[in-house]
Length: 222
Image (cartoon, rainbow, N blue to C red; front, side, top):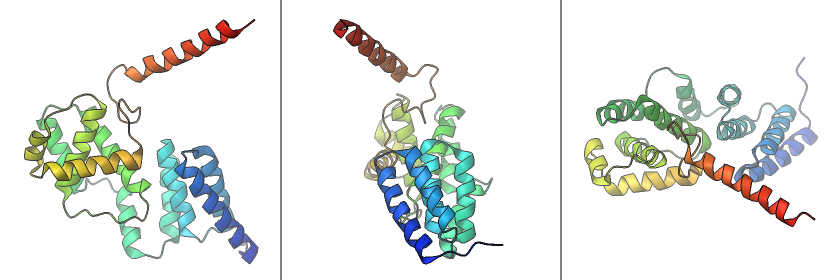
C-alpha cells in the first residue's frame, strides 16, 4: 500500500530540497545526497528531487546511482521533452556530438581513452545542468569545445584555429563552450575525472602537501 503524502511531508521535502541545493552548490556532495534522498522519500512524486539526486550522484562519480535516480526522475516527470532528453542517456546509440567526437578525435591522433573522457564530460554536463536550456542545434560547437577542454586537461593542446577547422566551427564558439564546461563541471588541470595519462601530476602535489603538513606538525611539536 502506497503511503499517502501529507502536507507536512511536502513542506518538509521542499525544505530539504532547498538545503540540498545549497550543499550541492558548495560541493558538499555527501550531505546533499542525504538531503535529496530524504526529500524523495517524503515525496516520491516530485520529479525535481530525483533529478537533483542524479545531478549530485554524477558529480560524485557514481554512475550506477545516477542512472537509478534518473530512472525515478523519468518515472515521475510529466514534461515529455524533458523525458525524451534524459531517456537519451540510457541509449546505446551515439548522439550527434558523440559521433563527431568519435570521428574527429581518433583521426587527429587522440587515444580512445581520451575520446572516452570527452564523452564522459558530455554526459556529466547534460546531467549536471538539469532542466537548464541546452541548445544542441550545432553539435559541432559542443564537440569542438569538449575536445578542446579534454585536451587541455591532458596537456595535449592544439591550436584553437586547427580545432575550429576540424569541426567546421568558430574559435569564439569553442571558447564559449569551453568556458561553460569548465564553470559547470568545475574542471581543473589534470582533473582526475578526465585525465588519462599514466601518472597524474596532481598526485605529486597532494603528496607534497601531505608531507609539508607532517613536517610542519613535527616542527611545531614540543
